[in-house]
Image 1 (cartoon, rainbow, N blue to C red):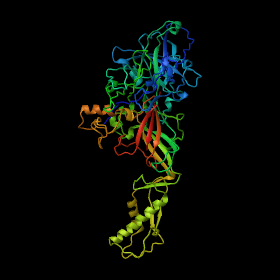
Image 2: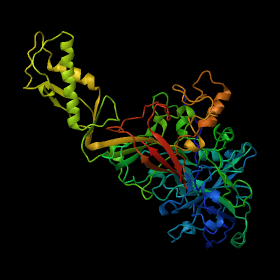
Image 3: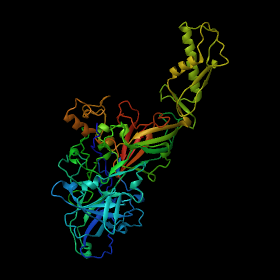
Length: 620
């Protein structure tokens, strides 16, 4: 079966900064452009993510997706995430039909990056109004795309204005859809191709209707390209203009941070088992990303609202432009991921990057993020093997080796107690043989009659049991061998797992809309039908008895619950850990387990922090 390219849903964070009238957008800086024959000038405002000022923002600005409960905020992030090393302006011409996807390429122009230079550490004074010289072919109504920090993603030759994407030169026969569907690839975990020389940014898709409320936004449209309002024959006219084309940009990757543990964190209610953070990493990160966030098919998702909260989560609720322009002023929370439009079922695995032990880092906090391509999927593929994960390594206790037996993570044993359990199992085996009449013995039988060795390598271990020198039982009949005794002990204790030095690994599945906008199995009667084992997301298309209405209700309830989207910041905070995790990191690349499990023991809260920062409190 071919994987469906349904959607990624995510809060676009502060995709953008304020408009040119905001106090937190930079003052206009004039360039030294000289008109040449055949050249024209346009005026545009490129709005980067900037610090919101209380004097120009209303309260809802901090919770654009209506999460409530303090789990969503708009946050600047790091200074390095704003730096502009180079900039391009790409112009497309609208077609008579087909919308902006059909717009044809006109030309590309280099923008002087000094327009964005600022010594302000808060990154709040970038230039917002730019006067740009363009070719004579550019006309009013043409559409603009801005690319900041192209890194190695595009080739541009200033002398000839040649613009190439993935080795293919853009010509007037190429469309915006051709450009957008150019797929970037990354072999590294951190998608370094997007950040090597400044953070890659390009136009943020905006919609003309507010969402994140209980009012339907059906009929809304989405726009990525921005129309040119005026074309001027002289630089002076452009500088004097009052209607620059307003372009809002977003970063091209998602961001994840892990916050420090509380010093009082302990395993469950055991005060003797303190929890100390050791390392973490990202896993299951996407190898592929579209050049521009894809909103193809957005109309299919406008009516998505959970039965339980009724909020139309597709778009934000705050006017980011503060009344200008009058349309296309709300963030969108939607994307299509190229990974799920390719046929990956033939191999049985999803084509993602997988972390190795060497990828772990001990650096945490806001100053030490990890980045990755967006990774989104439909409900059918809302499974562990497809989901971007946080892998977490902690130390439980004071560094002593810890053990569990019979799969009981609620009972943590030291080596000596495992030895005692093994000896008791051996004694019970011999006594059971006597009771059954298989053997007879005289004298007292105790644990001292057996030698037990418990390995201390991480993972499942095999206990060695043998009769000791004190074994002086007088047996009538056939005597059990050491191998028989060991087999009986192994069967009694089942799997014995060693946590070397108390090291335990946990896996956190990153949520996007999460419990706030896509609640799951809350017991609320409005979630009808309720999830059951074997049908975790009721109504999805793999249920042959599901109707079209069932499928639509399933999408409305759960689509976008997990995943990561570009320009979103997922902040992970561990509030509690109930049980020991894994003794060694498990491989989940072929794990079809659904992201939500009725019998699971990991519970998650997602806090969203423009970056739309999504902080997640986990009880592990």
